[in-house]
Length: 176
Image: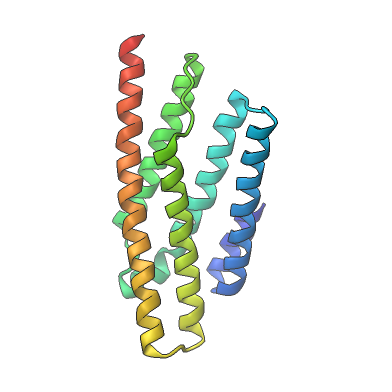
């Protein structure tokens, strides 16, 4: 539900509210996972459904941000394609392996990737909010740099974690 609200807010250029709603979605997602692990409530459905919901939120946000990023070149189609391809391939692979009885949950590199995807979105929302309110050029330049560093770090982590998951999957399939 928060994802749909976020997409409407992005489409309308409401950056402060986009930041608030995205923060709420990220925090509640983290809290849900934390409580499930702490109480030992892990299930195959949860291991598959939770990442899928995350993918809708993250991929949808980057898709909706694409027109804004294209104007200045800080978000272009190949970047969104890298994110989408990694998420679709790994989510499908996870489902396939789970159906074969393998446990193929997230690992530390996947968690870093998710953290950087969220950090990049936070950076983008803050940058767009500040730009909308006409901050001085040096502040704008600083936040543009932060945004760009976060985007490229996120893209690197997304690609590397995708390759690592493919490697793990190949090893699991070879064993069977």
